Image (cartoon, rainbow, N blue to C red):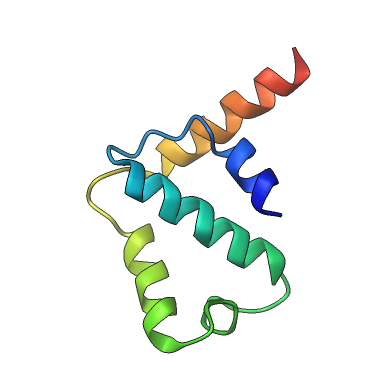
Length: 78
């Protein structure tokens, strides 16, 4: 799962490499436990809260993540 998430989000520009690493980590975690809620997938309340905080970050917009995934899709089908 890790390799997939890193490849899928390789073009993500969230303004800081730490944010990109965190995004990949969140995606890996949620994808590996896709049939559960964020709280359970995160493992504990603090990690779940951090996941929600990441999603509400003022430093990037969700469309930045979607654009990165779209670019990866385009590159795959070339």
